Length: 521
Image (cartoon, rainbow, N blue to C red; front, side):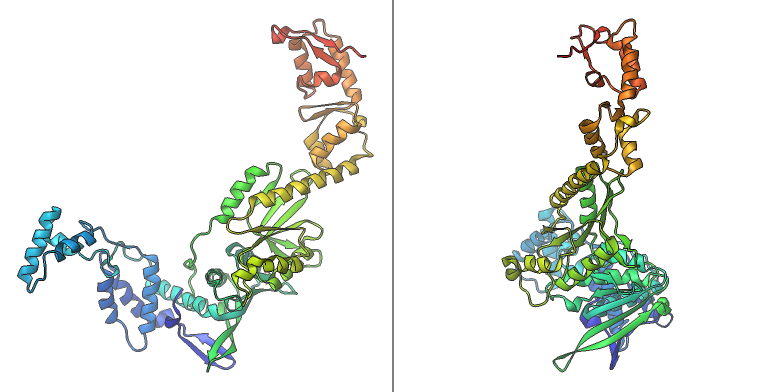
């Protein structure tokens, strides 16, 4: 992004637009800027070189190109000795009045630090920004650099947008998912043909990070195949804020880069949340990327995380509100409820990021945020608060509650089912998957109502268990070593012997210990 001082716009009410620089017209200017960025050049030398490139027409362009390059390139300096210590040693030797005296001081300081006089002179101010040297030349051509500049111009310009509307016939869902990923407050319009975005000017000025999030997302928009962007932009005119209209679309793709540079640091909170919560919920399947939900009537909404039960197919969704306003919270959750139907929705709300203009942090600390959420989050099944990292403990606790509720629901559903009427041994997990119920509900049902044997994830209906008992009783030598293959053929472990009505004598040799019928009181 650029600074406001480098932003050039034109306006003719009701329209306003940035002054773009077509690459075919300004390629030579961009090439001259890139030529100045040779390896080893200092910031101070760049100041002088680029001053010669600037003209009355291009000085904002040249400075904007420099800002983009300086942000991406590495400037460093490895002095022969600590510059502060060198300066102290030099100043202790008093003033110098000519080159000879200065050379003598440099040599004396060099002897003290065991370096040459030239190294002293080179390192004396090496900790100052003007003296930092460019490590590598920029790997970008003049055309792409100008396209990156036009994008940065647009991103900076839209920092004053109160709202944005984006349409795309090819990438709308992908852009909706990208908005959720970078933390932009976006939602589908009522007809689901466009995305409506809360602009940076509509939130409190203290949340500057939201500007960068919107800017990052705008880079994703211009990289789409087909798109149009409309914005309502606030402009100060004679101490009065007025709204102007801005519009641009994919017909201007030649102005913008194919691969936009990122303007926000990588935020790995989502990845860390996915990695850490995955180990806490082994009985759930996690989708850690934003997902677009579609309702029966065409409603669409984006969830940040989806949690699925592998056997029953039930799903629960997590919507993250890292930056939020009460109206956006209400509207997005309403859309989510329409798209998700009766599937549960959890809302993770950052208690420090209520972006309502005019609400100070102390008011939020006094509970205003919780009251705002309570009023607007009625479509969420649960609200989980967090301050910095996404709330692993809170989400895990809500998922555990849902799991217990679904197990109880499935136990009631299975009540009429007689497991002992099944003709063969069956795997509990496979049985649950076929009937789309929770395996734990099947296990409870087997223990509560069945007369068969549950062992090692396998259930033996009573008629099959009776056949197994007959085979065991028919063995010539009823030792554990002889019984174990029979149990294995039915998918059982030795723990099933007790349920089958057998006891194992205390072994001296485990394989030869005797298996006998339990005495019935």
